[in-house]
Image 1 (spheres, each protein chain N blue to C red):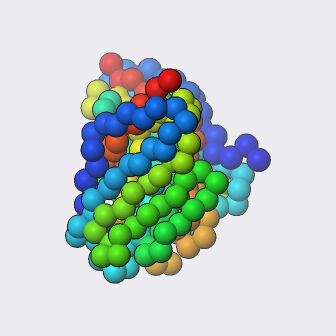
Image 2 (image 1 turned 90 degrees about the vertical axis):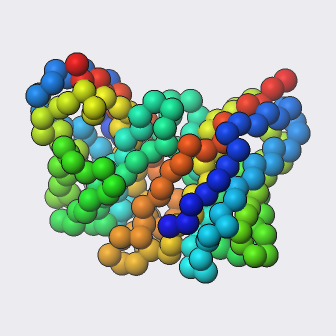
Length: 115
Length: 114
């Protein structure tokens, strides 16, 4: 799976959009971009994933550049409850054997949302 | 749905003791996995399973055993606990092609080995 690079930490004011970047310059054509977050001491929580196109769900938007070498997770109106570590993960589409299905977590970006 | 449940929440072991961390899910997911998270680090995959009767090793399997006799349960056994196994252990399950879609994580078991 391709390696990802994220800033160590970011701050965001409550109510503003939080834009979390991720660099994955070695991504290959069959690798997806996933985002998870981990709120203090809890288990990670899935946010969103995508391949080429931009994706949006009730939690966030995922913008993937045309060359797929980087992406941005957008939390449109950050709240204090969004304070967490955000992990950008790249993984290949799985086969039936399951060998490609692991999530490789790096150290992520610590997002602090402030009043 | 209870989702993914883990027991116990906290455990203290002495070096050399063995124990089993329990994980159960009620979402009928085929894919289940175990991760460990050391302080200030990301999660590392220990073992995973793509269905009942099928298990495989992740990146840090040494010192751990797993079995998957039912779809619901995926226990993790520590054979002979060592201080290096002090960590937070998370179990996860996922739907679709083996865990391809979102994976659901349990609340974790905090293990200290003295």
